[in-house]
Image (cartoon, rainbow, N blue to C red; front, side, top):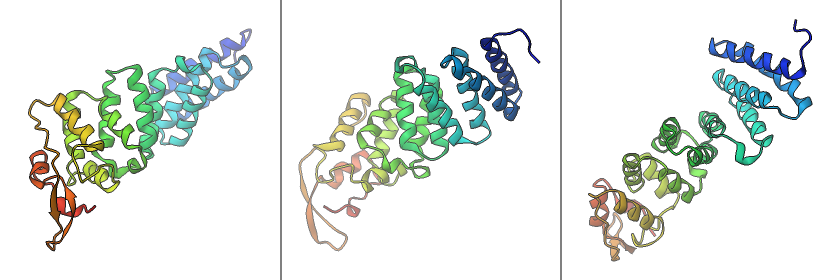
Length: 249
């Protein structure tokens, strides 16, 4: 029992205790002590120690698989401080919780904010890349296409190149998403997101050859003319496995 200490000292005690429990993997006990610190801190309007307590409890909730509670704590933390004072850790941690729930669209936004504050955050880059490598495991199909492309460009160049190429390859999970969602204008490589990605690749990959944008007639698998498309041969210069017959105008 603590005696003759101020409210702030109480908060500090429970924060230290929560951190100690968490470091030993005793997350239930950590959650209990962080909760004490948070409740005590409400009387002094989100002290710095209460901020730490929200962060610690959110991480502890994440470790025990309570991702909704983790997201709630990280969000409360963000709502309680000035926007410019939110650290990249908080965005990164909440992004991880969203990712664990398969809420890739929200995770991407948090990872983007984290990387804008800390561009070389390797773990954040890794988790963001994992989303694009496994889009079928979450709701990436709900994301805005421009956000997806922007997020890819926050990764190191060596990671950007294969992902951008995969987005053009419908045999890859990412490529299937781009084509299925009609994020491309398949009749021309000279406009829309196809052009954006080709332009990006041209800038960062010395081996990439930008396809011509001249339109030529194409046929479906019964040999019937159905519209104008970029030449199949040009798309196969990017990805040999590309099958233009699936996507009609």
